[in-house]
Length: 228
Image 1 (cartoon, helix red, strand yellow):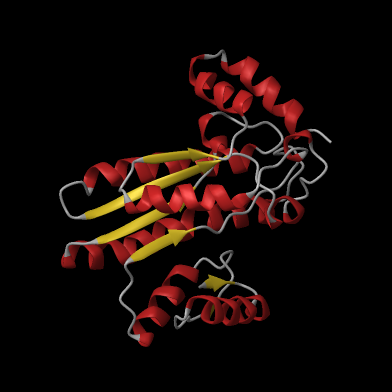
Image 2 (cartoon, rainbow, N blue to C red):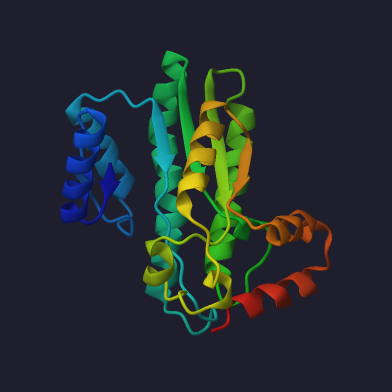
């Protein structure tokens, strides 16, 4: 398990080992560090762990216009949401292909389907991760290795508070993450291309129509949902 807060990792490690009777290992690293992926891969190799499933679940958002947000904020987000997952796949996929099995789950977002005013950088990073994941799925289809992308809607996790989004309209009726996690995990095991989960009925229908709707109309709706 990898995250930046060692105290929280220790608590999760203890809970996991107690509830599931497994041995858990933790690696504390900040994904805003450009070399985070190399540090993770190096420690995994030192521990002698053969990774079967690589789950890229770390994500960072942030409300505000592109011109208002600082350079450090947006470059840090790009590193967390795009660079580190890309580098981790670059490091682990050759190992997976060499032995003929392995599964990847990249947690993206339904935000990948449209530009997102007031979260322009976040929506763009998720579009990148989704497109990359889909292309990698195709490239790996005869290797025994799969790459699945999970695209949830707004979830009731620590993401909203960390990103300053708890008071936006989008997170007024945020869904619970349990079902989304289960859907993503099952989709990964089945080697699916993409999994969309965690959307109420009307949102699910809207998301399905977004690629066919006028882009300016969709962006107006998104901007309204991002407002406080």
